[in-house]
Length: 288
Image (cartoon, rainbow, N blue to C red; front, side, top):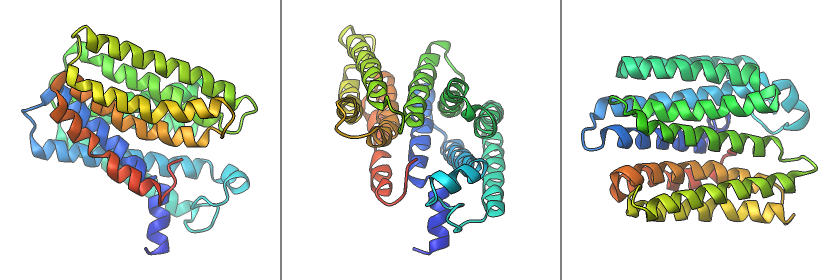
């Protein structure tokens, strides 16, 4: 691959774009399964990917001085992309993504504008402080799921799903921020407990018939993907970096579980199909 193209794909975190698209498919399945309009859905898939990639590019531009000392292999400090080019890429993607969502519809445009604001707040200000950073990043993921749900009128009860994504990604952000902390093993331990408890709640809801039974394999897959690396990190067998990667990929399985819990296995499998390219590309490009 051309080195310049590879640098751009690393800048925008190419594997992670599939987790953003998973939010869109899951949100659309929750609100409009069986009544999808292809053009608005494809437009929102593009919008979400552009906003996510633009946010990653802006993040690296904001961190360029810190990365020069701590992460010199990233595209900007390594000299493969200039700061000016990275900022231009970020601006282009963020504006294009927001514009695409506006084209998809008024509801989608309003959600995208809120998402754009959260991205800028996180990258330029909130991430410097642990709690605001975690809340802002969780908000970005919750609004990205809402972007997918904006293809149809929203049933208030479905807001539980963006709320769950908000909490999950806020926790993920805490874990990522503490990759090199002295008490990283303790962080892995409490996150393991929280996610295991959440999975137990999900299983209980399935057992009581409040969620569809055919969502159970997706919940099991989520637990199998995310809990073992946290357990090993808690035991000190390795650091938190492998757990962070699995937690990011776990977003796809979480979205598949959402879709299947309301619309059935077919919807879940459609979302889950995005895991394969994310896994394959994750071997070639950094996810963090």
